Amino acid sequence: MTTARLSKPAAAVAACGVLLATACTPNASAGTADGASGGLSVTSTAEDCSVSAATAESGPLTFSITNAGDQVTEFYLLAEDGLRIVSEVENIGPGISRDLVVNARPGSYYTVCKPGMVGDGVGRASFTVTDSGTAVEPTGDEQTQIDAAAVNYKAYVKDQVDQLLAGTEDFAAAYVAGDDDAARRLYPTTRMHFERVEPVAESFGDLDPKLDNREADLAEGEEWTGWHRIEKDLWPPADAAYTPLTQAEREAVAARLVEDTTTLHAAVQEIDLSLDQLANGAIALLDEVANGKVTGEEEIWSGTDLWDFQGNVEGARVLVDGLEDLLEDKDPELVATLESDFTDLSAELDRHRTSAPGAAQRDIAYVSYGDLSQADVKALSDRVNALGEPLSRITAVLLG
Image 1 (cartoon, rainbow, N blue to C red):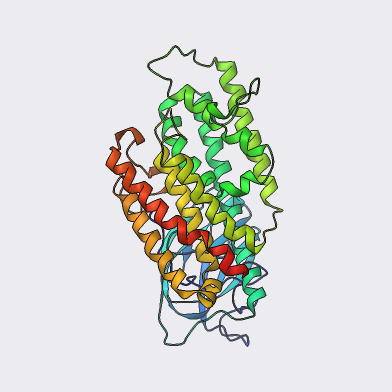
Image 2 (spheres, rainbow, N blue to C red):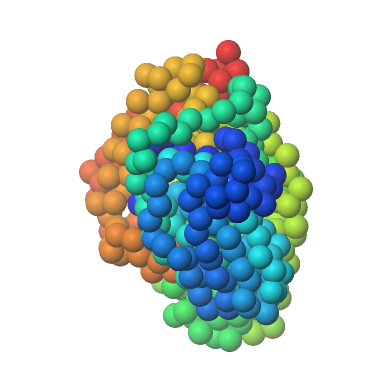
């Protein structure tokens, strides 16, 4: 999935205490006294997320969501990258209707419902907001914008870890069942959800090492668990003696992976994030690229480093997008530089992508890291370094 253009956040964020980036009103209906003029109906079922129209004019929009399924559901308005949550409404019980009001800017979006409130949702569809001719700008003081950025990013983290947990369960089931081909397909695309929010996982003490330690990271006598333990078993080294895991060992390491991911899922429900943590999180994600992915040291058995690379870059861009209104006020030239450097890095990475643009998460594919030439690696490294310099200035600009 190609990352979105670094533009102003595509829409103001939602009512009901979720993603409060701009003025909005909870539980409003179209045409009521709150001023919301655009009304759209949404029907959520177990298989679909039907929206009454695929376009609307910019300004206040009301999505009236009815849960016609038998599970609690959520409704999301996603930005053009399909990752950033512009707005959401949660916990819509069966037979219940809820309204979501969004002060929407012109742009391209996606709508999606999430029955059961897990996984990547159903009925994802394109949604376009055309220009009504009326300006749509953030409201509130700087602290309001900071609070909105933190709430927005927390919702994004929760969504990514929701999808990580569902994908991990599928991956573990395939691995335990001995369906190694399916497990190999699921391995890199499921890990992308982790890579997008990796600094958050690292904030929970020893949870990140349990999930993501490489063999080279282990201290003497330390138990090796997590993704890379299974990676080596799925892609055993051809030039060295390797004893495959027994069925009992497979079951144990897979169960531990699901257990630790479940712990991460519970932990992120309660995270609180400050402005410096948001800014430094973007820097940390690019450091992950520079120190592991672009060197091929992360996925030494599978060669799937470029999936991780893309996940880290997408996560960094989501963070920067969420802070852009604040950055624009303080240093518009820095915003322009970030825009250019993110675009150049994404274009360089896309040269090695083998899946079609807009491919579903599970179908994203790149060449193996081992297929890159030295010139390819240098070109990627140069783009990472070029982006690293302006990215490193974000925290000082925001806190200065």
